Length: 320
Image (cartoon, rainbow, N blue to C red):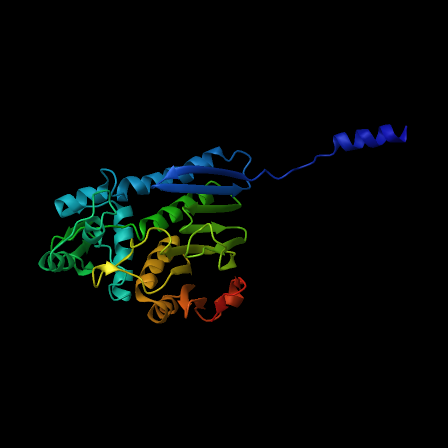
């Protein structure tokens, strides 16, 4: 009799279970985009909105399809969408602050090296000088009021060092708008952002992702951008010299936006530890560089990074 009464009470009690976390991985912008969220009964529309945001940025800023960016490069000037203007404006700001270590006009260098699908080309000394003269952020003239961009000096734009970060920001904004309580957007491991929960991340070994990580750290809110020589050897150029950057082995930046973290990680990779970490402090970001000193792995950070982000180096890795 008592058991029957208990059964009736249990059936009549309103139980509420939180919606299960959702996750989807798709190929976007030439890499795997991993989107995760919690807090929605039906996560489908939110996932679709996030991937739509990623694809919209790709359609505007890819150099692998007939995008708005490629049309601007062909014509040398054009009225541009608010999205492209926002990314270009931010790119020029980082370029100026980094003394040209980050530069959105590296397209001629990247193309000549064979990183945009064509075979690499060998150039004479005079041809190299002519090529380098085309690379300068000062060739980009942006009129925000008229939504117009003009490229001087036969400049051509490559936003590969910043567009993925912007895409992550837009995807995360879409998840917020859909009402997710927690979310994470990971675009190829190099641009990551989230909200609502801590994210534990490994510091990828610069000798290859199959090797043990150098460290781990935790980010509660914010965005992470990484640049490293293990991605594609020689793919990050020093715009000031026209040569591949090789001062450090890897860079990770934590910033308020993925666009900022993405651009700064490229700038720091070119600048090296001293100038690069100073640039992060100047812009209110945090981060670290991976180096080898006398053959031993070394991580140098901005002040207080290890404590703020619970950075734990692997055995044998020095933290400084």
